[in-house]
Image (cartoon, rainbow, N blue to C red; front, side):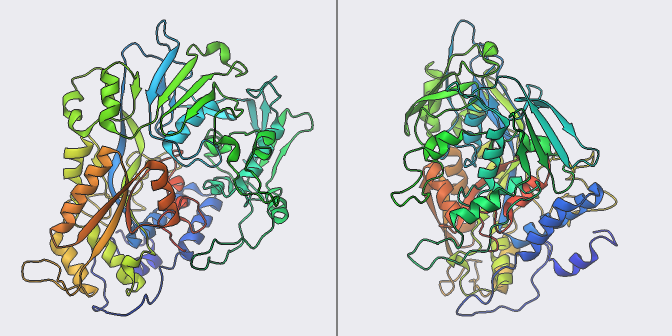
Amino acid sequence: MKSGKYIALAVALIMLFTLIPAFAPLKVEAAVDKLDWAPYDELIKSIKSEKDFVKREALMHQAEDMLMDSGGVCPLYYYNDPYMAKADLQGFYSNLFGFKFFMFSDYGDKDTIRLNIASEPDRLDPALNSSVDGACLAVNSFAGLWTYNAEGQLQNDLAEKVDISEDGLTYTFTLRDDLKWSDGSPLTAADFEYSWKRGVNWMTAADYAYMFDVIDGYPEMPEQPEAKEGEEAKPTFTEEEANAAADKLNVKASEDGKTLTVVLNSPCAYFLDLCAFPCYYPVQKAAVEGAKGFRDSDGKIVEPGAWALEAGFPSNGAYVLKEWKHKESMVYEKNPNYYRADEVKINRLEFMLSDDDSVIFSAYKAGDLDFIDAVPVDEVPNLKDKDPEFHIVPNLGTYFVIFNVNSSLFDGKTAEQAKTMRKAIALLIDRQYIVDTVAQTGQECANTYIPTGMANGHGGVFRENDEDYTYPLEDEKGYFGLEPDPDKAIELLKSVGYEFDDQGMISENTPLHLRYLTNKAESHQKIAELIQQDLATIGITMEVEQMDWATTLNERKAGNYDVARHGWVADFNDPINMLEMWTTDSGNNDAQFGR
């Protein structure tokens, strides 16, 4: 690391995988302390208010340093996006963030596309969804102020134009004329005001609420007490207090419903990107608050997303969900009230819901599916560079292993010892073998969390060494070498009290057993098995638990795991998107940092 760079941090941070902790082996009966995550939270806040974009990049490098030093996130490779599509299916497109747009497709004389993009979606409510497959469904059935075109560039959507103040703080969006919901009722700027304030409302409990914190008046949730064992956490705020706090979000619709005025905390170069993201899409107040199950018999809100748990809810995009046979199929039909309906040639999207890659591939080969988003691992060599219907497009994201930092796996260890354990386990994983034998589509092995190609916010690339910043391993442009290092892993584990025999196997006196959570897709299962084998080389035992996709998401979110598969495809092209998700209050902080 070059002289003069982050001197204060250099003293405080230990470079990932390259230095041995300075403490002696320690055996204690209970956890001495927890990982202090308040400095990370404060750093993310400072990044969001920093107006000097060069300094802002430096702060984001500091945040990644802290994240990687925690050992809680273990990157494996950077994503790309393989899929298969019938040759005659044209006009659909995807972007770097994994969104797939089918509304302007052309399929010859066919008016139906049969697809598989995932298994049962966890959420269809744009404010509550946090998965890529859910976002794909959202972009085809909802529309926001801004969107992406076939070239991956931002363009206005429901907004006819936007006027931005000279100081970059005030955005005034003018909506198109005669916008409607799928039920024919008017869609106005008031729907956006309601939806954005709903998105930050503590009663909604949206994972992506933090995506609105660039807006003036964003309500920080008051600290909540931890739930007692066997009981649900009870919030300290009332619905009235939550509504009042949300109403302070500085978003205002004009009386005629034609314009939406938004005031930001500080200039935000990616604000229009946010306006193209599903959590910024409008939802219909009458449908949300009138849904059966929204409130219980006592009038308390119990399920904010009740309105979108079955087919038939109003939307405002190209398609409307007409049929939903849970865990089996979904049918979307063209929305005649979509403002670009005359450009939509495909009348029907039929989704097969499955995470069985072999079944999906067989259906595609039999002609029962026209588009699939996954293929069996064993088929990739037969398809790559050989089948014109097999495609690989770029993605901006990282596949990684995540640790629950509060797992009982770390009982009896200090926060520093727990970090060391996580780093040691990560040192055992053979990333290149995973890419070569499972991923197989040319993915780049990862030794940073922020992926290759992500912008730095001021005209350059974040993952590059320059005069202001070099990664701990300068030649690698990352935090660790990409080759597994069992000897180093053993050394680190010995330093925190684990014993090993003469063959380099962990002793029965200090066993190490962990549970690995993954969803059922074949590729994730095979990656889990390879990690299991890597850990077994020094005697660590790993139990693989497979669950369906929606359950995996919820178990990870609740912290009911030791180690799990994870992946994050960026929501927009700025490192803050991948860093802010790990703040203590973020709904996407599945590692449980700060909790």
